[in-house]
Length: 268
Ligand code: 1HE
Image (cartoon, rainbow, N blue to C red; front, side):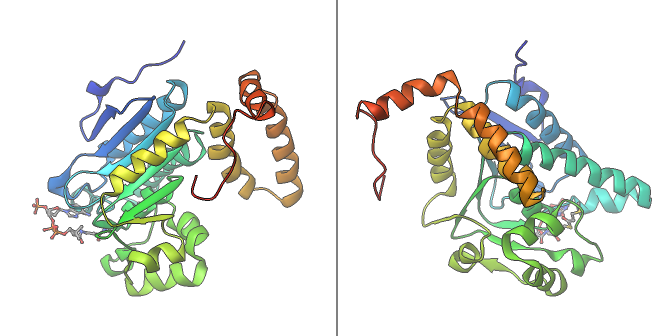
């Protein structure tokens, strides 16, 4: 049976259906600059566990207030006085949430503005597309706080910008923004206006694809990055075997064959 998204279950995330089975997921603790406490991480786990089976065709992830996300809730962490094992388990819940995002098969577009820092950058890195506005900036200030990244920066930020730049950010607290951030690979789009607006447009575009194609794109590419070239080629062939013969694709292929389908042109 298809599970439902029960919006009243969520306190720290604001969920809304934006049409075409596109959902907006908004970090909703602006008074805490959307810092990620354990409760918020659990809500992310819940949503991204249910979303792939609830018919969600794309997600726009954003933050309320002036900032996307200030990372780990430092006040909660300070107050909890955690043991090494406690914090290891906290990090495992972050990984649970972010892996469900990256590998879940539902396209996630992050709309970034203001601070996207520490764990906030780790969260954004688990999305499939990132859109920055002119206020957005990224940093990994853990080193300055006496901490280390625990939500996947060593993997996903390094994938985006390379090892040397990641280490520089961690050591020096370097901040990137604007075109430079896009050129380095932090985001695929920079907008003069609202990142949310473009993210929604991109999500709707992605939602027009068949869900099985999006599943392959939004889980297959990531899985294949973790494999040897030989295994990745094998897995790609198997996945394409399933996706490229799906009955729902016949109509689209027929439209290409009878010349009624749009052609690929620059600017389309
Ligand atoms: C917070 C947090 C937080 C704000 N945890 N409460 N992340 C950082 O080191 C970033 C820390 N935050 C900042 O640098 C700034 O807050 C911002 C640049 C994001 C925003 O500045 P501003 O001037 O708008 O806000 P503010 O006055 O600093 O903070 C407003 C409130 O948000 C204040 O709470 P209040 O109750 O005193 O009003 C802050 O305490 C609260 N707040 N950021 C908790 N992060 C799995 S490991 C991941 C490791 C990390 O992510 S390390 C965290 C890195």
